[in-house]
Amino acid sequence: MVPQHSVGSPRLDMLRFLERVQVQDLQRTRDWIATEEQLLAAQGERRPAPPPEWLIEHGIRTGRPAVRVHVGGCWDTRTRCKPASADAARRALAEGIPACLHCRPDTALGVLE
Image (cartoon, rainbow, N blue to C red):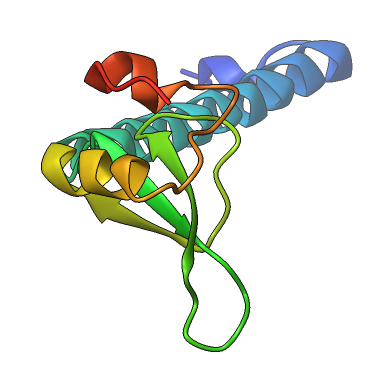
């Protein structure tokens, strides 16, 4: 008996070849998906720490004095911000450090300028 794959037209042989290539491509895509899912799951286990509740922005001069107080999630913060407790933020506001005009930490802390 003649094997089935040798019986047929050249066109049928090409279609069977195409099918094998597509099956291999599908498996490669499924492997990529599985790898990406594993990476995402590993990242989920290492969730970033939540932002601090309050930030104090420091200037660029020598000694880097405080220049503004922010709520922790403020969009207008710079790289020169450091985390602060609520008490430290209140003290900074009481000492005359301005509150950010966008996030209004003075309002959130119950401190009026």
